[in-house]
Every structure is written in structure tokens, then in C-alpha cells.
Length: 357
Image (cartoon, rainbow, N blue to C red; front, top):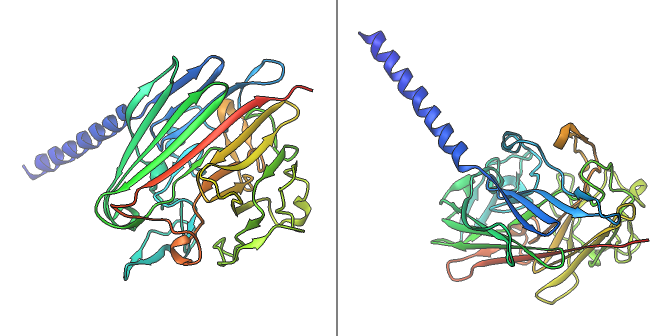
């Protein structure tokens, strides 16, 4: 009799796991927003951008973001392809911080540090699609996620949302919001798309011209944690105040770029960066409301991506507009603390165009 009971218990758990897996599978989808020959595909797994289709100077349509062919590959992804990362993007040193006299210990997933919100941050959860209009005059999609108190060690419930919308001509608007429902908590969301304006399978981005509207960086220690200093880029390989090739000073770097730039402008909507791929003619102009941007040149990337193409180091660049990394442990950095009285708002505007030569 006991063996039959054990068998029934095992069958119950198998059915429970099967049902849970199917519910999860049903919740994950792919959604396209489209305006003429400009289209963006999004999945609600991690609120990720999984493709951006744009014409080049010859009128050929190409996908300019790195990614995968299947949802399961995004579920297994460790590179945050296209994701909204949080509750706190970038690194928190020692996987801990003190807020209002309380020490919060987080889950470390980058050596002794917490990276992009922990091993199950916002990039590895299923978001709810609350609004969706595929095309017409105002194509857009809004996704929401309720992060519970204590998730990955962070205090308080947070309701987060992201809206992706298309506008003429070739404009992608990204609006990230978050509200602390009951406790003060750090929030720093970032959109982590890997861009290659030549096309996701076109090789490296070292010959792309880039201009970054920032005259300072926040230098890092050996564990990629900010030292707390804010230093000028003048006479360093980090100076992109005038346009130059991404790879023009790689010989002065250890391994590409992975650094935070405080933005110069004091305007609410700030100029961030301009990227130009001369071969395709595509140009991307980025503006944002955030105080900083992280330039990352996919330094250690080795992934099998769309169509079986194998992405290599420097196959793309990320421009992650954000609050300062590890701001919770540096009082001199702009605060990333959100309270029930003070919500989080972060807007990005990507304007794409084609330069014909």
C-alpha cells in the first residue's frame, strides 16, 4: 500500500511540475510593433527587445540587435540580451548595502557582488502584457512586473513597467517606470540591447564611429566596482567627446570598454551618444533622462545566436542609460533610492537614420 501511495505522490508532483511548466510557457510570448519598414519584436520574458529591423543605405532591411532564435535560449541566457535589467542594474559591491539603518544582504552572482539585480533579476522573470497595439498611428507595448518584498534580498514591493513605442521617422521610445509600494528601496533599471548597426551577423563594431556626450567616467577597482571617484576623460582612451572609431584606442585598454559615463547635460532629456556604421549607412542617436550611461563593447561575448551565427567579442555595443553603479554605497553619487512618495522614471529616445555616401 505504501508503495502505491508513494507512486501517487510522485505522479502528483510530476503533474504539478508539468502544469507549472505549461502555465509558464503559455505566459511567454513574442510581440511585434511595426511602422512601415521599421519593426521591433519584444518578448515578455525579461521585457526583452529581440529584434529591430531597419533599412540600410541601399534599402535592404536588416536586424541590428543580437539575440536568439528561440525563447528557451533567452531563458538560458547569461548575457542579458535585450533585457530590462533590475531591480538595480550594474553592480552592487559586496552584494550588500545599508538603507535607513538596516543592512540588506543580496544574492551575489558576480564574484562577491550583485550584478543586474541578482541571479533572478528582472531579466529572468515573466512580465505581464498590459497594453499592446501592433501597428497603426501609435504602435506600442507596455509590460509590467510586480517585484515582491525580499526578492533577491531587496526591500519592499515594487511595481515596474516598461513601454516600447514607435514614432515617425524611425524613432523608438522606451519608458521605464517603477513605484515603491511600501518601503524605500534602490531602483536602477537599464535597457540592455546589444546593438550592431551593420546587422547582428555583420562582424565586430570596432570600425563604428561613436560620440558620447560625457567628459567624465567613474573609474573601477579590480572587481569592477566604482572607486567613488569621478575623473575627466581628457587624454584617456575613454574620450569620445568628438566622434571616433570604437576600436581606435583598444591598444590602450585591457579588454574593451565596460565603464560608466556621467552625462554632461543638465537638461531633463539629455544627449547621450551617436553611433554611425558607415558601411550600412545606419546612424543611431540616443537621448535619455538618466544621469549616466554604461558603454559596454561585449568584451567576453561568445554565443551562438540568430540563424546559428556565432557572436564573438566586440560583436556589438551596449549603451545602457542608468543611474551610477553601486550608488547605494557611494553617498557622493546621485541617489537611486525610490520611496512610496518618489517614483522612478527613465525615458530613452532612439532616433535612427541613414547617411548615404
